[in-house]
Length: 155
Image (cartoon, rainbow, N blue to C red; front, side):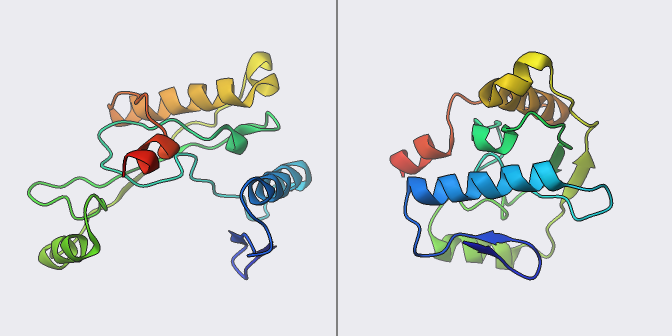
């Protein structure tokens, strides 16, 4: 496991399954413990997958371990005719949709810093749900009962 020049965490092939998850979790917690204001923050995508954006998927709780405040950022890709940003079919169809789109708009919105309650500091899953609810509210979308693992099983 290592970080590239941009600080991106890349699991090595020597880790497998839960060992990779444990190593990534340990790296995230160490970054949170040693973070100094002004240094590069860590960026986590807690849904763990891309999808159609019509609902907010369940978050992986590992992103919220340690009970530290988080800066939620919501992304939206508004479209009128062709949903070219979501990978919802085969590669060929996805590439064709992207080629037929003269441009793709991405809206980035920083939400207020989320400071966890004492209960959320002790329970990463509870904090993940709190952050997820705030982000879904900001986007005006409902919370899904599905998570990334559920979607992967269906595909």
